[in-house]
Length: 276
Ligand SMILES: C[S@@+](CC[C@H](N)C(=O)[O-])C[C@H]1O[C@@H](n2cnc3c(N)ncnc32)[C@H](O)[C@@H]1O
Image (cartoon, rainbow, N blue to C red; front, top):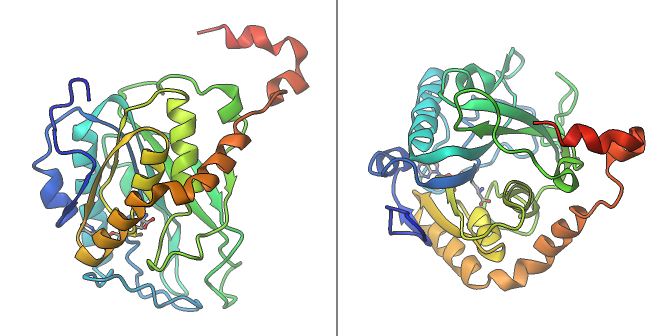
């Protein structure tokens, strides 16, 4: 565990994430991968209006929701090591037939450096009405704890996977809004390459997908979750993590590109990569 001051790892703590985060020490999380509840904003026109969490209405005045998200993101920022990462999954939402609400509205009010906006192409939409084109995409914001420039460069075998991630939604998990495990796996394989024993955090742990990916890739996890029911599910999944290893292995095989893009477009491109 190195110099980690927070000894309680490989556990999912029960409670409200903001309250628990305020008790965390500073500068020890290596990477957060998370998806908060989206605050449905009364949106209609979907076939899955029924995303209802245990212990949560997911329905607040939008300004209250955004200010809570800023508080959570600021606490994660404080608790993250300098240069550390946060991958924050969210989406562009719409006020029923009205205007769009972009996550940039609150992300720009936080201390994080916004390193990249990744489009997650789920190739499946939950809206079926035609007020706008069906929404196949969500977003993943790659945030860095850094004052100026982005941190270390990704190896090209990871960077070549591009800024549009074609990962279908998880369909077997009974949680109302789970990640597919390929998503946190892609993050961890890319940013840590062969490094192990990092502290991976998810303040909205749900069914434990971030933790299962972390364990299978040799890292530690810390989770927060308000629903005891989901914690039970997550703990069972973590115990049986090996049964999901084939999906993480399949993701690993994608990070194995022999002829990266830059070499195809410019054979002498290798010398650019030597530049700082
Ligand atoms: C979108 S789901 C996360 C799903 C997770 N990524 C997975 O793969 O299962 C959001 C989760 O946050 C939990 N939650 C909502 N508000 C919370 C809060 N204030 N503190 C802790 N957990 C919360 C919900 O119970 C739900 O399980």
